[in-house]
Length: 500
Ligand code: NAD
Image 1 (spheres, rainbow, N blue to C red):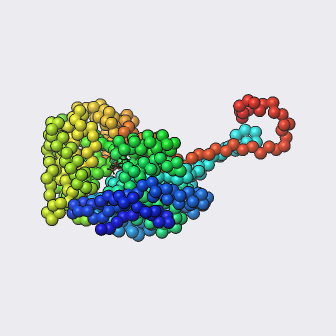
Image 2: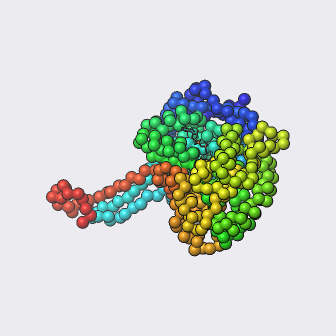
Image 3: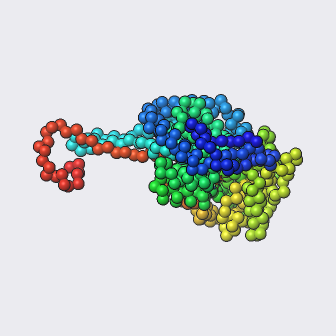
């Protein structure tokens, strides 16, 4: 059995003896085991990070950026290998796996411009002979705890900005698909990153708690489900750390009566069912405005759903592959049953789907619910599977209220030809990322990613300038170079200084 191990500078410091299975979602078998670490592995990694970080922080920003350039070239050269590895553990189709890697690389490209992006501010002559300037300094050691659904992109969201600003970084990826994070760590070292600056430790709650409590770790970035995000946020902050913790989602797509329904159906098919719905920016709720819009949309959705091809993740023709493991498959199917029990109309039932030759694989067919209402648990909670729910709204006001009042506030989209309606919707909706005729409004790397409400705890987003801010502390220096003309009088020394 293949064993996926930690990447710790100077060796792995033994083992806890605990492991976790890595499945092959296409076949339904265990394909490897990952070593789960604990306090001893973390302490070893922190020691290596403490030894290496001061010299890395003192390396000028162009040189740090050059490592990112070389890493980008290496990842591009290894794109096929990484996409296949990612797909084999996660189950997303190869083209989507390449997208996962590429969206992470976009952040690395941003990091290549760090000399410009991390410049401080300067005020000459803030007072008599006084200048004020600020500089951004690294936190020291940062840590990132990442979910299974983007095993390339989300680690790069975190370690790119953290490392290029001069921190050492400890990555704790999902134990369900840890091999790509390990390869990314190896490629960073191959790109010339000094030992100790990026290490990859595997584990579950035991490792996460050790990270949250470790006094030498100054900042923690987390992405995963909301209850755990909230827990990580509270425990990390209580230990005096800077924490950003992104959580779950239930994104709505509002369809106005004037929308181009063919385009909407095309967009929804990918946004609701792509990656088997295992995206925090998936669009699992569609809100047609008016009964007529709802009926026309439902009619067009049915043939589109019937045409979806569910296949093994290496099938170039497949629209989506299996979900990550059997437990998740059962969870999604449980939510479908819950929707039925709550009285929603199950128009298309994806349960019981079997792929010939891959009967043990974790496949779920696409499901469509109509007449879902806001009081239903299956509406309130995240399903994270290939399930689309239609919630009919009477008018625009009701359509704005639905995502605004939902417990999650990650992303939302509106489909319309009416600029005024779109503009008003974007201004009023209580959600962090908005798409206008864009179904998956994941901001580009030089903007920043982050939801509202239970979709994110903490006040700084991922990547872009928000990432630079999160991984650095501002130091502000007020300097005076006396010209010798002062009379030395201490008359005002006991009054709070003003600039006159
Ligand atoms: P998860 O919460 O189960 O796991 C996330 C991380 O937390 C993993 O590294 C895991 O090892 C660790 N973990 C698991 N149990 C823990 C515990 N009890 N205590 C401490 N740490 C624990 O999430 P997942 O299933 O891997 O990922 C899917 C979730 O992530 C979905 O809810 C999805 O919406 C969310 N997500 C959010 C974003 C975002 O940016 N908002 C992006 C991607 C995924």
